[in-house]
Length: 200
Image (tube, rainbow, N blue to C red; front, side, top):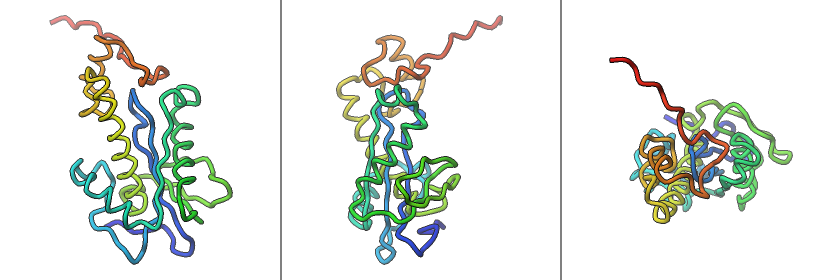
């Protein structure tokens, strides 16, 4: 059972991102301040629930939360500043979008660049412990998936409607055959080094 917030004295936003390990597309982060008197059933780490359930939860989170925001950092920005910093910038942009400003922030993971002068707490595997981080993980994931599905229509060779830009065999075979697009992260290892054949 997930706890709604880490503390209850200050208005708290949960933050998480999606797409750090992808070879293509942006990294997307979300920040969510939940309403304690308007609970949302079924919140959990976005990786623990299926796509259909995530897509059903997204409009409910957006309707019931006191505030929510989504931040995006493009693949070009990731190549310029690196993926870790890109993730933090995306979180800051998500926090900037909150109509009600957070007085305290909890972040999934073990590192964060402080946002303005707002106190924060990093929580490893926080998306499986706190509802506000879980809600942020669902928004980040669903908003990013939507972007990748639209990019798939433009570039159908990579299976982005299925793999969402992650380094699957299908995606890498597409890169090998068709080459990278303007949406690929050129600072990432897009193709694995060829392994030598083993003697049978």
